[in-house]
Amino acid sequence: MNVSQLGVHSNLSAYLQRKTRLNNQVAVMCFWIGFIYVFFVYAHYPELAIYPALLFVISALVLALNFVGYLQLARFINSFQMITLATLFHASILQQSEPLLVPFFCTQLAMTMIPWVLYDWREKSTMIISLVICYGLVASQQLLNKAIEVPVDVTFFRESYLTPMTYFCAAFIQVACILWIKAERPQKEEASDDKVLESSQEKVLS
Image 1 (cartoon, helix red, strand yellow):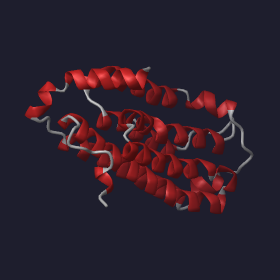
Image 2 (cartoon, helix red, strand yellow):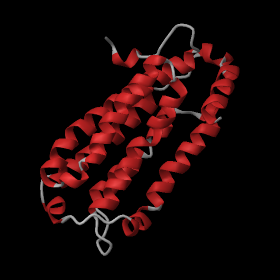
Image 3 (tube, one colour):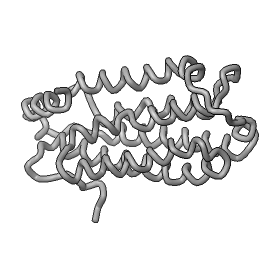
């Protein structure tokens, strides 16, 4: 079974077919990042393994939602789920007096590109909401660091293989998003999709 085709049916507009495929591809990326990270995090920070585990589970849920036809809800959740969990992980691993983890913050910045992949200005209302959530989480990182306190030692993260691994993850996410955006080519048949988009946006925002 081609996972990228989950929820893609001929009765959908060309635009929604294209965005649903992209949503599946982003969900698969998040799924594997969560799956891989849960083992490394559990080995050193078992208290924080819940965050990559949730990324793994929610990504699978997004694919399931696409499969059963909740395409707009799946895309909306997927647009900010990874950065939400990453921000909470970052806040949990740091103690109040400690500076940000630069590689992890770079990863969060890369994640803000996901809404640009899943939406364009034909769905500007939903896209703006998603972007506000993403950039709001990045901007509130220091406040969350003070609000969330988990007694763990971040020294290992700063000095071990987890730092270059996280830089690689940031680069991978950014390159993947750039390639997805660059590959976007509006099709002629999408010109008549406005009414479909308006209807679907009303459902996800209601």
